[in-house]
Image 1 (cartoon, rainbow, N blue to C red):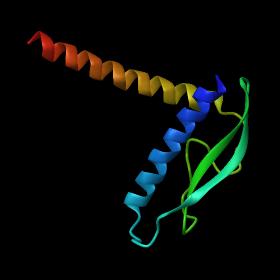
Image 2 (image 1 turned 45 degrees about the horizontal axis):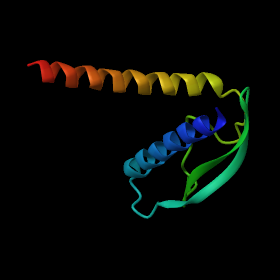
Image 3 (image 1 turned 180 degrees about the vertical axis):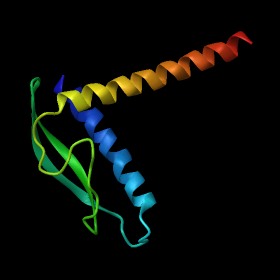
Image 4 (image 1 turned 90 degrees about the vertical axis):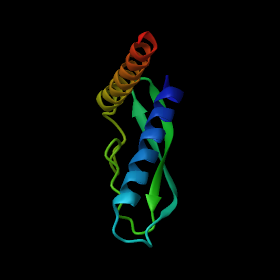
Length: 99
């Protein structure tokens, strides 16, 4: 279960930093590697790579800075939203096929 959680969180963080960098008015700000931190969940512990930017202005929302626990609710809600969106897309595609 932890490999799935790790992939889900890292993918979410990648989207967050991309949105952050696109929204920034500073053109000089860009990616600046990743920081690793150990997260603890009821499924076990794992190392999460969190992206960072040159200016240090990136504040991740899915896993906040210095947060290492209490992730289950966020993980489940992120997964539920993803499943819901993909389900709606599948339904729209099927409706198009029927027309």
